[in-house]
Image 1 (spheres, rainbow, N blue to C red):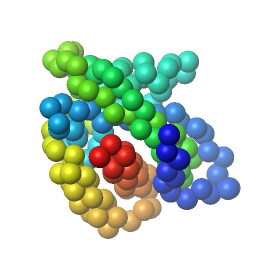
Image 2: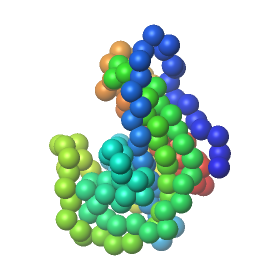
Image 3: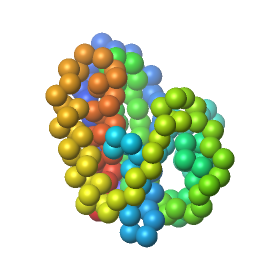
Image 4: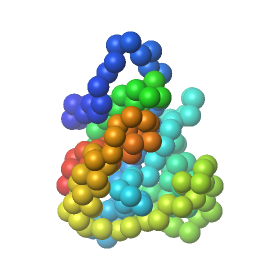
Length: 162
């Protein structure tokens, strides 16, 4: 297993709350799934929930898909200073199993996910381009910081898979 990747700067004056999270690269016919704006599917791990269950649940809720053969790629730790959270993100790669299941989006953003299937090199390039745009925004709020950090997470996981 690769060593963790750290994104953001730890601030020793912040009492961070840990937020376990899962993200997944879903593969189908040699293509990878990227959601609108360079994101990967996934989300928070609920209390007393296994990472495998959280991964399956999040993909079902967001996309109405199921996966198989999930394998852990690496862990990425984001220090989200505006939220006072340390996201501990376990990244996986899995194969698409089925589609067209009912979805259960948890917020408006999830309801508007649009899947895009790309060769991995094109997915990496898309995320690189989006990172450059996100870096131009001021890092003075969690929306901008979170966007950049999530793109950097997508980039790290895609590169771990290629």
